Length: 288
Length: 314
Image 1 (cartoon, rainbow over the protein chains, first blue to last red):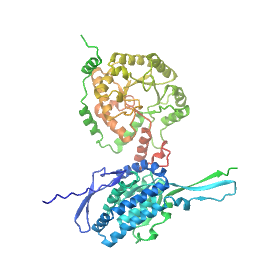
Image 2: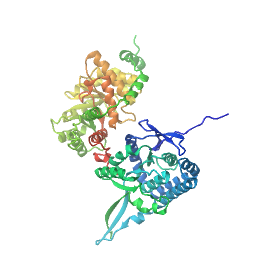
Image 3: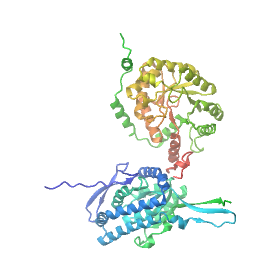
Image 4: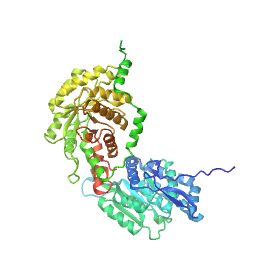
């Protein structure tokens, strides 16, 4: 007897829940062979606004976690991705990657999460400082998370690009609203399911699917986003920088038109963590 | 012979005012959120909502300084440029009325509302409650928010409830009265409707009925609001007396406020879309209204810390 096929509805992960777009819109997604795969939610600027609200709610609690605990949770996310690695590899293959390349991308994504998990309780020692001053004071420079950071993932590699941009942002206590690859959004949907089971509090990472041309202007101007980390072309980069100037947010752009080696060790660095930190310097009198 | 048990008294009251179709109410209010309000209508709605806010601080830790800054915010909710009206009133405890009066001055159009009658429980002797009302009015309150005697209501002593409201009306003198039903303690929509009528039968035109104190778990909902504005409409059609309405507690977002205004427009009509007849009892609502107004003006979503609350880094 033949079974009826049970197909999955792809849903973005926002505020710890799997949502549909508030607009009800979807767009059809085909796999590499051109066969229909699923209808993917076409998120709107209102979905982006709602995601920012969710991130704002989750932020203070996430930032108050100990660095050690944030590292544990990032590592736990790596465990989840490792455990469902075959499923993720199969997905990447279905959307056009060669099997060996897909397996490399998934492995690199797991390793990247572990890499930043390791930095969680160490970056402060590298980036913070006790400054020399000419008076009987301690002068400390310590880091603080910025708040909500907008991430725009590159079209490819759909998984590794997203992971590489999100991990260094959340490790320090920021929260993220991310736009998945427009060409290949499904790996991000799958990653959302892993985020949901990784002990990461709901709302710390919010993943949207949809069209860049609709969402980039809102990423640029939304005043509650404190920084942007985007892998985009020059046109989108300009829109982002102009909007960011109005609301005084920090922008970190990876030029998506240039070939980038996301797999290499050069694609991971503590400076990616530093780019989304505020530095606070305080004076404290030296006690008798 | 008329039975004197509470249930018999309740039955007689319900016979007089009619029951509430609870399922119908829920269905109806669920539709209010679906109205599409954009651009000019939204701008108008947001500004109207600002003008209806009773900016409230009712905490044990209120100080004269906090009340004074609340009053400054009431007079100028945001920088010039945004073209925002003043709020309807500030709402404070009786002990803070004179501080509010000093901070507001007179002739600003912003009224001072004071909760009184042993707010929020109302569990004090009537004599004490009336004295509190008179003291608040003497200190300069323009409006009094009283709580009804829920214990008496639930015990079926409706005459007691109504007589006490009438006594407070008298004690108010020139001040307007808002009668808080505390809907969450009345349990059912039928009770809310009945209590609305008990109050409306003795208050004056221009007085209000109000949902809640904001001190219990469940506060103003669209359903409660609908039952009460339906009662106001029925009372108006029967007697010609126009009573105002004030939902309070739990209304935090501009979107919620607009939905409440939709309910008012579609039930009572434009005559109630003024702060003489409709108010929002709220503290955090004003900031969200301003945030949405700023968004309408600039086109960009605003961060909550641009407004005078939420100082956290997020």
